[in-house]
Image (cartoon, rainbow, N blue to C red; front, top):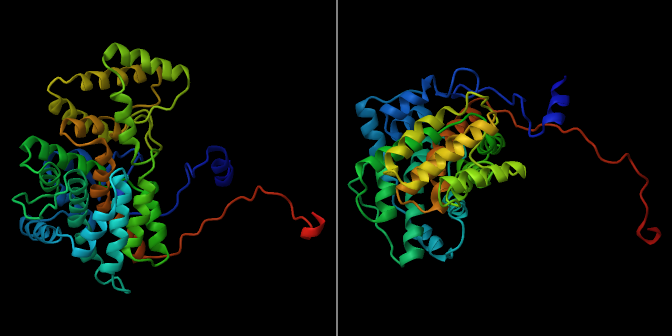
Length: 375
């Protein structure tokens, strides 16, 4: 079967190699690795900033490099007067993903990248620092009319986000769990949002436009929004028995269950799932939602073994146990994946060719034009 025949049969460019990248292995038999480092090792031993540095500069930082990198990110947290004014105009009820996309687009006008991209690393650091502030400023303003400040004793993105979201010092285990989640979500090869970013970059567009486009792709429930949908499923059941019966009914009705299956992983499943599941269990304090989650997973393992849980499934309950509102699950994804997007933008720019695939035309044959008075 040719590539075009396979694509036509499977749809969604499944199985099509769209380029080369040195950043990540994903679903190739080698597990999930960032620049050769196993995701399990990174998630256990690193702060997110170490992994963001790895993705930005293709090497893990030493202690001094990490300290300097974190200092630059901290200095990039404050919002300008103009950005705060825009966020205040966005009403309650708007999805935070659209808030983030609007903020990034505005940054492209207020803090434009140089035409030769010589300041791209500075802009990446700015995005890493500012995105948690955008989310937390808007959240606190629309829910309490309060303008938060950007001073914090928390020197990491994980701790800073949790502190500013809840306006109190976060428990240490929450910060560790958030580091883990941010690391797991940081990079994942040519996924929909990353490919969107690379397409934008291939046109020689600026980094803010490329990231804003990627956020648009991440917004959908078949990509980043799956963690919100997964929590909707889990929280819809009152107990384990209801969950087992309900999932069986959904499977009988051939409904799609979000949080299960992944385009690039086979029966071995998503390696990120086992890592975040441990944190979900640790944070649950025997809450019924974890038992419900496991019950759903067990039903799927029995009835749909080809669809093991992915990273979104237990991430949803882990976020809930940290007191994070469901609508912020996917914006957390942005805070993390911006590191991967920007790594790919840099890589695309380093050896750029316009990404412009072709399509197989399936429309009508050429027809004779009929003027309007004869139609």
